[in-house]
Image (cartoon, rainbow, N blue to C red; front, top):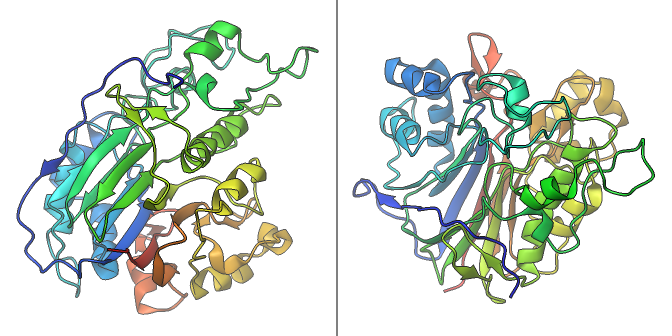
Length: 398
């Protein structure tokens, strides 16, 4: 078995409290993935804001309480050992924000992130790798972009027990089957934007890749990640290839490729495992930037069955905003994010189930203009997030 990991990282699941509401039927589960855009520019700033009182966090919590997930996947919340996650869960989700009752999530997972973790290499070719934390130049040389450690982290909250967590934050890009690296277009050599020693050192995941099993039915593997956006680079397309590689790790995992996790344990996804691939994948299979073959390989994998969550609000938004949306070829009902008029709305946030799961409901929470819910979506005139949450209700085989 090819070795993908060498350094062990501790990962702890915490049972916080006994659920206050009845758990759902043993074989039915509702999942929500939400890029909440709750990142801040300095470490500890988000935690301090949550402790003082955050209007954005209250709005996010109100929407989550309306959606009633059994499992909630969050993107862009600080990965700081769980303190920020606990402050949000206990101070906002567990407090009623609107008409829907509060939500208790006793099982929480906040894995370490590669964001802001120094690589020791000059990854952006600016001639330095020793920039001070807090600058974009520091983030550009980190294993995953972040101006401080843990910025843009991810987390999982659950009303159902979680077990067997495996993270792949330290899996090397070079160990991905068929790995391809950025190319310096000014030279004839292929894939030479980085030297061999840099390629050997680079981690694949810009945050982390997480496989954790939810105790529902016979067990549901939750495969969570937040690949880097395939933009903010140059002709070498380093972020485009990074995004494709991060998606490719899940494709290889579905294919049965063995991995070694951050605790140095050999892991494979059983051939009959039920799963949902979750998170802001920063990849639209039709429109926008990125390598479309990578997201299509995942969405069209023989083990997956895309439920294609939709909303009427996204259709109306695309027509109302126009500009780049007028040139898009994808179905606007599938859009989950408003990237602005020059890029248009895209489908970047995913809950992709395995083919053996019976889909009860699949939707995007994108309120229609003028609706009661549309008022929830703005705080002081600004959107809660540029991303809209995706909800999926499925029945898991016993």
